[in-house]
Length: 331
Image (cartoon, rainbow, N blue to C red; front, side, top):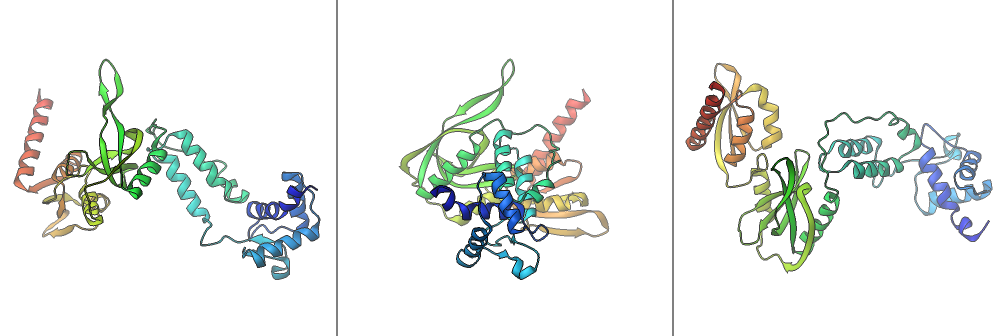
């Protein structure tokens, strides 16, 4: 056995314990020896295995249950401070499988990394794993790098410049770079399976949202962010953004069907007022401070279930849109 193999003994043993042992699947020293030979083509005597298990347990503080303790064999417990539980791994895998903001190839790589940190017995439960979703994932491979670059620029207080694309219709549907803004970044937020950058465009004073999967070729500039914003201001903008339309808040009052009650908390959070309407079990009154444009978009999508009461300007705007839409269908 050469020096590298000898020094690797403890890692061989640790990897085998992590991959092939748990409370329901204890392994003997002989089984550990056989697995190491099978996987790494290295022969380790049983005394060396026991000695290294003691090193892992008593010097490196790995939570290893031994045959002397349980009367059966060896297994390693998860560290609650550093190791993911099976349900947590599954949640991560599901998130990357279904998230629209990441390309399938990158999602697959991340999922494989998740599988590599859990035991073969947990992975066996995922052998028939399938994704049931429509084909709506982004084609932009830069999203993960965008998150890293924006995070670094926020930490270092640097402005960024990037290309921003949108869909356009010419003779066919295609993507086009529509702007190349210089932006002061303040936060990344997650909304409806998409990541958004909250930033202020050069020459402007107000926050704006940029979808990360539409951002390409980020450059971190040497120029520092000059407009200082408190965390509370960023939070207020994020909380006021409905359908990711930011802007000044207004108090909106609407009559909503009871079927929207759960959805309202998902969209607007807990900072809303819900009032029962006397004699009406099918509807309730909603009062919320929010961005009117975003509320309008949400209300139009639920037009048969929402009636805007105030502000009157928003009610009139809704009435006009509904009237124009009705005229289209009456022709």
